[in-house]
Length: 638
Image 1: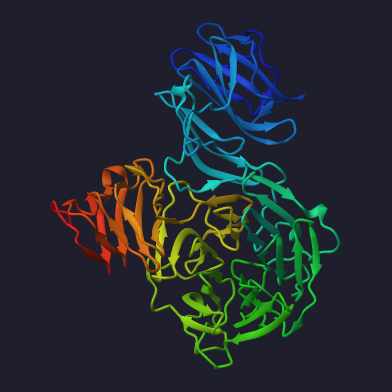
Image 2: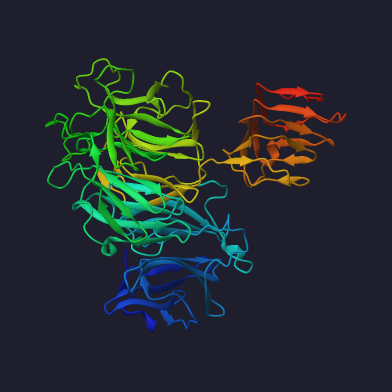
């Protein structure tokens, strides 16, 4: 039964408040109260309640400490250290800071003070009202919470026993891993939205418009990848710019210049205007063009390659309006998709139509919208998308959700159907996915599936081998979604926003920003020293390109901290010369899962009996390789 002990309590009791920090000792009936939201605003005072006899309140003197806040997490570790994480302060900012309080000294200390490498120095992004608990071994478990309009589902562990030598959050022990940037950037963060336009450059991500809970948007944001800062450019724009819209596309053409085309506005119209942005001077200019311009459309593919902008498909004014079964985009009535492609010559400011699915001149992709469309290695790649049943193009199979893949050669102006040639872990049929060319590959993420739900899987596509690989970054992934902004910038792929949908018919807009370092080629360096340990991640390649290289010392791949699978690949003339007993080592105990060697010629210039590849508990695959004068030994490996 309940006992009201309010009037029985002695000492100085806390004022009335809510959303405060509350923690209990394990060895004694002691309870701690910190901060919260009171009648006069936020608080940061600290009290202890002793229930060993008659309830006794005591206010604790503090040296330093967190700012006034509410909705924070507070836990007591080892009955001696209080931890406070996050909350919301007087300015309504959501916090991600960490403080710990030494009960015996009365001293607050800020931050993690980690002595670990930055690759291990993980800090939860800002949140308030998370769930937390202190474990028996003194660690802190932190889960979820709220960041602006986004509900979080990530999990962090804090090794609180290492307070003296430095605290460390343990979230992503291995790289590469998804990183949620949502709460960490400074500056004004864009509101949640879907069907936005996003493009990446070498140092930044540019975002325009989309559709949010209030309708179509026309705002403009820049995310600086090195500084980790959002910059709201909306009020800085010189002159008129594109109207509020969703379903449009944006490409980076270099030198701080971007082009925007298409979309649908809040009146249901499909503007055919093209805009050029000088991001340095934040100036939009409406492009005057000649030639045969595309009809108005949304959810089209757009990519930049070698001085030309390419636009494929989408749905719009030329399509047949679907007045029923608007599907998951209820209120975004669909038109039948388009199957044409246009090219815009930047030097001439001229459009030309270069393909139509219905002209019968040569085989190519059928009409679709919300497809993946990206430039990689001098070609254009088209993948999947939606071509709703009822489109009068019966010669194109797979109406509805598609999983086909085509490659377009811009020199020959020809499509090649790759669908029956691709292999590996091919993504399921989908539309609204993110797809971008990155580091000589394509990355595909998420989308909306034929099963009626959003996805958050991620794939690597190798355009040379025509192989899909399912990637598994070692961290909590972004929420499943489609129609998000997706781009490559500063060596990472970035995801912003999008809509999430489940079979429970719950649809909402995301406002989070995620980054991931994708696979990258690693070029052989003659300067690699004795027993070199390479910082190579678990989907990297090693490329032998153009000249001869010498292996004259041990080369050990991977470490227990960074598991990896290595691919040696010869792109052009050149060979590997082994001398002085040099070798390449791949040991499962060091985190090396496998080595795959393709089209590599190896010359052994010495009489050593040492094998070129030393494999311990891992897999070695040789494809089209030649070895001359080399020894080999096996201890039963397969």
